[in-house]
Image (cartoon, rainbow, N blue to C red):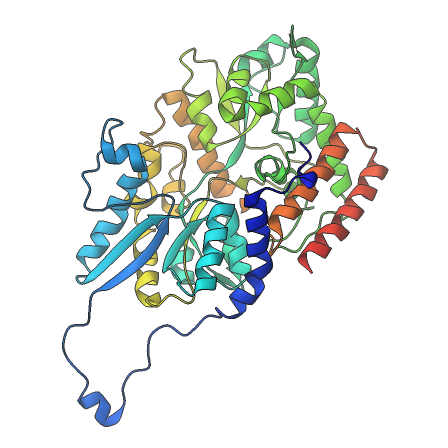
Length: 482
């Protein structure tokens, strides 16, 4: 489907809201938290009666009712509505409320990603500013637009830099991670052995990986999908998911596609070489295999990997729930991504759910205290990993235990937990960073990037032609950011 030829109602609303966002946010410039204290005689006669009850408006992934009879049981009615988020809310919010009598919390879901962003812009336009919110890719854009309040460096430093980098502005962090994840490379060990390679010598460099992938591909022929070795998601419209699984290659080569603050560097010297190298790596599998398994989502591509159609899969923490929980128990290991000559370790932080305080919150000090005291709590940070699976955490004190950490009850097998621990190590030590969050027109920018990637891959472009494509892409993105 050609998305350039189709304008949906949702797309029209999204575009309309984003076009109005600059004017909306200009009217929502941060205000100093709290009212000015009374002075002189006024201070002596200030009322001493208890203030009226305060209600914080906390936007979340889904609604939350702290009074509900929530249990971590699929048959529980509240669990059916809110999943494990309901348990997280209990653990995060209840202890704080006990210390703040007279304060109430309204916990409500407002969509995710672009839906959440649209609802945010509409709320700001209407002058009904919430107190806190969650986000992932949208957090960076909203940070650069001045929507969020800065948070304490002392608290932010408790988390790994990669988990808060997307919310950096003017040297301050504007979000803290509620939960997180990281990319690593999963390897189907049986495919390594079948190719006559030594499974104790996993690739540590780009050359090692390319040689191993080509060797495996030559021998790993599927009757329907042909010869395959490496899988990653194919570029697709305005999805950031594919770039989340290849962005690390560019960071490793010191040629990132952009800065944390959203300055594009798509055509910098050396970037074309990365695209050319990655083209060769993708060529160790057939286009049909990649596209068909891509269309099946995480579960389908994980099953194809477990079944041996692919030997390598760029994966994040959540993939351990599908790869590591396979009852057939294929021999799978996770490794940190191999690095290029002169390069550095890097991983993209994915599944990085952040919480922020709105700069125009009427209760900014209270909202800030809520996030800064509860999100660093190990029980809160580790809750989803120990119950839901899917995510890990950005808290340094927990990541530093990656070799032995076992509060991973959400991952149901020892094989899955071993894979997860490698993602913990990568998030702690692997040069982790969030994918670039563009200051505006993010959906149009991702469409442009994915279209260029598709041309580079499907067209098997030479390095010279890749550079021309990147030069044009850089101008396009700069124009969309102007």
